Length: 220
Image (cartoon, rainbow, N blue to C red; front, side, top):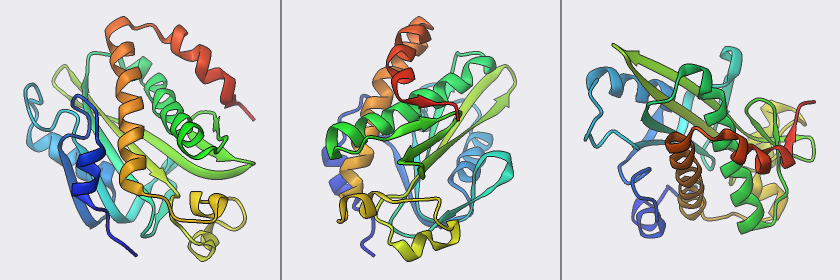
């Protein structure tokens, strides 16, 4: 399996700040856990390189899903966490999860022609098969709230990699019949997410964003 190419990723990245600082790990227990430890070590993220940092791992030993489920994370996927300090209230955080999910689905559509849906509250599906998921967690330090947005996407995974999921999951490689460039894919997701996240943080106007999100949102 070809390792993630940081130079190629940075060349394609067009964000203002999200993902500019990236921490690359060959293996970790969970990128969310790693991010949480970083925040606790450095509680003041104002003007810190940790703001907008992405923690990316080739594999996770104990990747996390909702309800403490384990997320299997072999080589070839995108397993990453975005660290953000937010002025949003904790009650608004599920909306950030939906914004992140929409960013993934939008890039899948525009760049690869894959028509994915968001399965409430935090999963990405393609034709009733799970393609990815998001786990947004919070670290509170004093009065500050830090977002830890963990994202897992089955990118260049083979059928045997997905075997532990039974017949309930799919990868982009399986859908397209070929590998895609993970570096480019990640850079486009971060750009799309940053645009909507900045808008929401500034305006608190989720209604406008939800008009496009609800078109691909499934509550079943």
